[in-house]
Amino acid sequence: MAEKVFLATRCGRKPRRVSMRDYAWARLCALSLALSLVVLPAVDCSAQSRLVQDLATFPRTTLEITRAAKSGHHTKNHDAQSHRFDVWIADTPERQEQGLMFVRDLPATQGMLFPQDPPRAANFWMKNTYIELDMVFIGTDGHIIKIIERAQPFKLDNLSSDRPVSAVLEIKGGEAARLGVRVGDLVACGRPR
Image 1: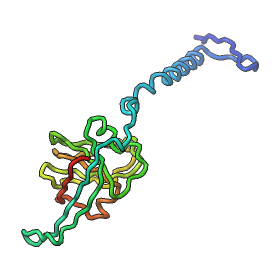
Image 2 (image 1 turned 30 degrees about the vertical axis):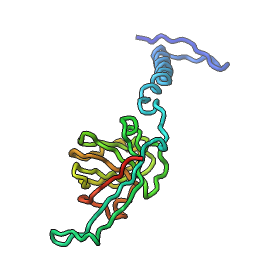
Image 3 (image 1 turned 180 degrees about the vertical axis):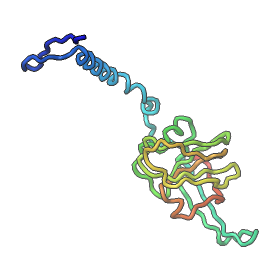
Image 4 (image 1 turned 60 degrees about the vertical axis):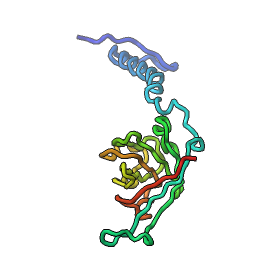
């Protein structure tokens, strides 16, 4: 069966022959492009349509991670090492959703704490996160149960505690290793200010 053909002109050039199938395909592409310009911006706007909260509005506290050198079953308190962090507290669902998204620099002594109340398995991703982060998962007894080091910016992989935690601490990528923070260390925080 012969395809119907019609003449088309564009930009003052000579008319050329275009098949009905090519014309229909061009219209479909143009319609798809027009719809994508209208529909796609509305699809992935859940987190981005909300205003990004200024971190200065988040409550803050000081958090301390303590590791004691052990000799047998006794802890030598004089050998205890501690590391302090000034942290923002992501204390609402909106703040937890935002986290450290869009932050371009995080000093080594700062971080963000994500309380999990009630304790539960925590799952994170690195969407819209511009910097590497260490994720320190804190068990219900206040001890570190897992550390994910140098989580990569913009990755959508699920980063999980694998078991219930009472909080998650995010710090600058590489800091946990640099400071010698490890599973079993004790985490304590002050009152929010």
